[in-house]
Length: 626
Image (cartoon, rainbow, N blue to C red; front, side, top):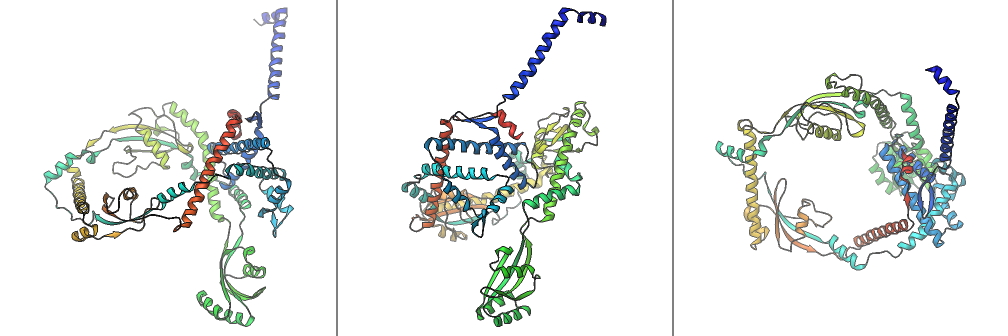
């Protein structure tokens, strides 16, 4: 065979075939390079103009860094990254359509206005004056360049001119405000009588035949639910994480990054007496040193013309006098110090507390350890899940699975609510979402179905089998007799309370006042505080509020609560007026104006996007966050 192949290679047919084959490979390679050279980087188009993906990537990376700092270095998951990327894309697209419109209308921001806006930012100032070095340092800390920041300010000023002109005339009408104010601020007052279940006389135990009839008439209350006995294995990062070992150096390194991003600043709580002369300061210091309380010192300060001031958790720079600040941060806590000379007199003080503004180091390190453990557990689960899948595919029984893949296993009986036969929650490990997923899967499977690997919440996996099933059945009367008696008594007590409440309501509807009807029955009447539609009064249920606002003055109603029945009669209606409540009216006016402006602004941007035919390359966009 090989000899025949060698002879064939010498023929002109074989040589021609290889020439064609080489040409195909050369062309394929060249075409691939050409394709790469001409690859598309336009993640979107606005008005026919391409938006380069780098603009969105820059915004995304900035937001991603901020999210990681907020989470103490933990990287967001895929869903969170997608959300961050979507917000970054929306910001870029919003700016693009606004710039497109600003260019069309000739709207811009002059250099002087840009400089004035930047100079006025407090973060860039030293003693109220723009500091170029501080400007560069702050931008560096936020991973942005001066050119980019100046461009953002320029765009912001131009956007403010454009959008501000659109929204300047947007305001609610007086008629609309008056109607809303009348609806929101109207007050109602009602008299109420509460008929409590607990205040009703307990009924006597009835004959056994009565209880059996109640048992037969209420089968749903005494029927045991369907139970399923299951075997379950769970592979979960959250359950595996506590057993993971983490190097202390990694914890310390992560904490150092957090501490750098959120530096701790020393704070002091201090009680200070500002005294005008040395003699008075000496008298006050002596009294304070000999055990006088702060309230005593405040009283003495008035007699000596001094001022008592208390500063809580103040940083040194926040203390008005530099000399006092230096002395406070050098003082021993609890000691009376002074007199300390200041620009307006003498200071006598006592430091009462020492703290820092930053996060507690031990708490943060414990959180970092948990995060690192979870990350390590997630990596282990990602490796172990393949082994678990292979074992299940090979029909390995759940109680015979390998013991080295971090599984949590258990066996038990539960109902569709996740409760065991004694009514307590079944001890399924993990959070509520995982428990709900396991219960749902258990009641979807059939007895002796083979175990299948299922995805759970938060990166978890589980598999289960149903060993047996107990169908719902009415529990024998002898077993639930005490439960039947309790339910019967509760029904009788509720019925008695309802009869009493209905009698009161009937008397009021017949023209009798609630106060008179309640007095005759030995019940007490209470007047509610002012009730508005948005702020139910204490003791008035949320279900009662709309009913009271549907009644005319003098009408009554009745409602059942968890503890009894309430009979209420509407006694007073107070119509609001803007003159009497100018603050609330102004607050409503501002809220409505803001709401209308938001609606108009969103409509304006939506109109610009429609007109400019905004489109997004979803495949290219997905590369940003994956």
